[in-house]
Image 1: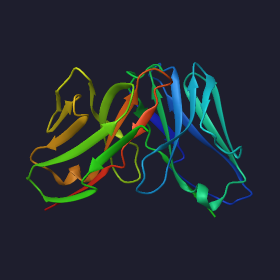
Image 2: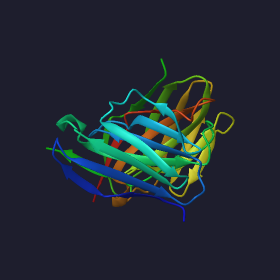
Image 3: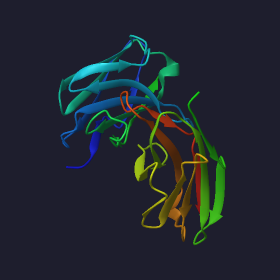
Length: 114
Length: 113
């Protein structure tokens, strides 16, 4: 299996809802990432997990809560989001965290906050 | 400041024609440069990855070049197809740290029949 999968593909939620995004990879990668991408903009890094531990939080608001239950899974828990949080959320994984380690991206979850 | 700039911002070509996309970067410490293809609403897919010692790398009809001295890269697409319509993103990886990627804004390519 050489891909990163993300579910759901689309998500619509209200500002009072709680929802979760899921990401999975079975390539044995030890680093996983969450990115946020607004329309016609490049992806912006949110979180980095290395060996199942959170190593980077790019000053993301607490209404986004990442979780890495095991080396293959990465979740992003959402609560009390704002309409401006509507975006494409991308998950990526890489064998390691060195600069030579290629990141493989999932297809993304299109999130709409009403 | 680490930056990646791409040109043109958008491009329209006819099916079967060739095109070249440009990328200039000011990133340090440099690890490698990658070109990704991103279809609308989908995740980026890697086309090529080059270290500073590599000048050219090909992937089918895609050929990337890298000039580490001038800090420039290009992506040449040969015999374009309708399915090449997408955004092409130049990404530079930093040495060390946590595999931080510096993304360009992308070139939006439209291939018309």
